[in-house]
Length: 299
Image 1 (spheres, rainbow, N blue to C red):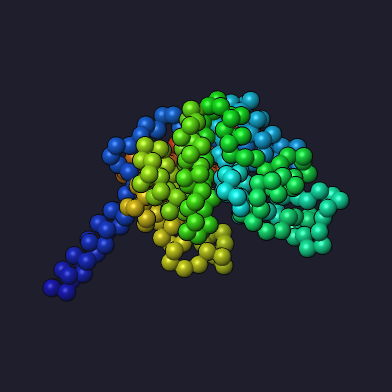
Image 2 (image 1 turned 45 degrees about the vertical axis):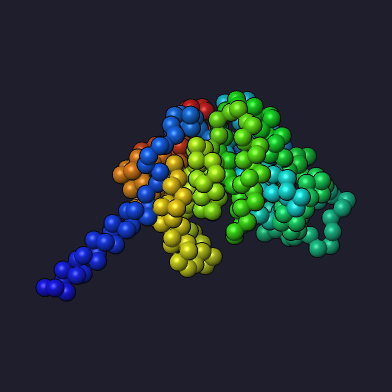
């Protein structure tokens, strides 16, 4: 009997600890209203086969003109300039000028020749030598993007943080501190979310996550990805919203954050009208690409 009681007590303590670990911000929360009610165009209103590829100024202008919110990705160049680009590596999206393709260009799976290296390997001026896919678009400065948007639509700014280098946080914050429009920040890396908790507690902040092991079990191995999937670092970051892969909305920790703690839930990345309709029952913020929602820019 004593052994059973001890096991019962241990189980109760584990459950309590779990609920404490996944707890998002529950007091002094900023209002969710500025961020809901609008659909967010993933990396702009883009088409990678057109002259408005992802995370290009052309794609962002199209989203602004149509009234959609924008989700974009920010990281730093070698000389510390915040630019908008999703991947850490350049090859998938960045292209050399046709007459300047080096012998060691990266061969992509589709046979295209991409720029070698990472964003952080180049200064901003050096990055201007490349273009985005088949367009004439260049990798945009975050500062120029903010000036163009000028508060017309709300923004979700994803901080791209590789490993432990959070130098992008103060650089981005410096620009956003002078920006008059509605914005929130998010990151897959809890260190970035924690930076905002510590330094800018009034900013609406979000933890990005995914069922990492489901799509790429060979890549996302080990306890770290279990911790990240199940939001077990929320007790440190206290996010105002959790942005989760909409395909895995059944994740228990994600559901508890929304349904028990009243946390805002963001869905990424929705690629059809049917998926958007399904997500409406489980999420509050919707990030889309690859189609134009029938409802227009309103959620």
